[in-house]
Image (cartoon, rainbow, N blue to C red; front, side, top):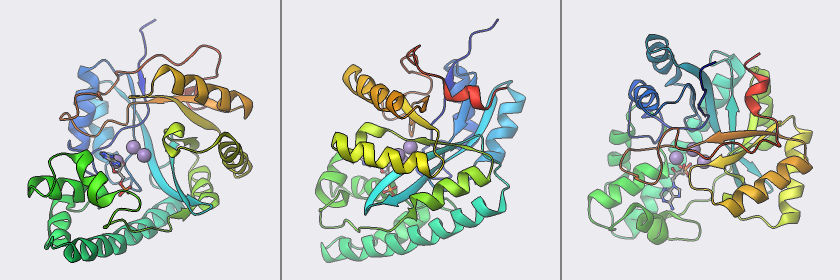
Length: 279
Ligand code: AMP
Ligand code: MN
Ligand code: MN
Ligand code: MN
C-alpha cells in the first residue's frame, strides 16, 4: 500500500493564490501530496486545468470550492469537496458571488480613495484578471505601492473589520451555499473553524444550523493551527458528529509558514471526510 497524503484546501490564480492551477498541482506533487482539493474562493474556474495536470502526474484531484457565506450577519467560509464543477446550480451561485465581489471591490476602492489612495480598482481588476477579486488583491496593491509594509499591515490598517476600507458584505446565505454544494454532489466542510473567534455557545449554534442545512464535515487540521486549536476543533466536531478534514489553505510560496501537504495528521479518533468520496 502506498502512503496517502491529503491536502483538501488550497488556492490558485482563479482566486487569490499566486500560482496557476497547474503549478499548484505540480507543487503539491513535489511535496508528496497524493490527493489534492483545489478550493478557490467562490469559483470553479481553475478546476479543469488542475484536473488535466493532475491526470498527467498521477495525482488525485478532488474538485472543490471555498464559498463565502453569511449566517447571523457573520461571514463563514464553507469548503465544498468532491463537487461536480459543471453543476448548473453551483455555477449560477458562483456567478452571483462574483457580482457581489465586484460590487464590494468598487466600494473598497472608493473608501481607499477617500484615504488618499487612488487607483485601487483598476489595479485589482488587472491583477485578478478573469479570477475572483479578493481582499488579498487589495493587500497586494497596498504593499506594492508602499502604503503598508506587510500583507498583515494592509489588513490591520485598511482592510480588516472596522478599518477604514472595510466593507461589510452579504455573501450567500449559509443555507443556500450548503444547498449548492449538496446539489452538486459535494460534501460541505466548515473551513478553519477557530478563525471565526466565536464563543463556544455561538459555535454550537452555528454548527447546529450547519448540520441542519446538510453540512457534514469540519477542518480539524489547517496549516497554522496549534495543538490547542486542534483539540478544540476536534471536540466540536465530535459533539456534532462531523467528519474531519485537513487542508493547508496554501496561497503563495512567499508565505514560508504554509506549504502544500505540510500538515499534522488527522487525529485517529475522528472519521476522515475522504471516507465519503474515495469509495
Ligand atoms: P475576501 O474573501 O475577499 O474577504 O478575502 C479574504 C482573504 O484575505 C482570505 O482568504 C485570506 O487569503 C486573506 N486574508 C484575510 N486576512 C488576512 C490577513 N490578516 N493577512 C493576510 N491575508 C489575509
Ligand atoms: Mn484567500
Ligand atoms: Mn477561508
Ligand atoms: Mn482558503
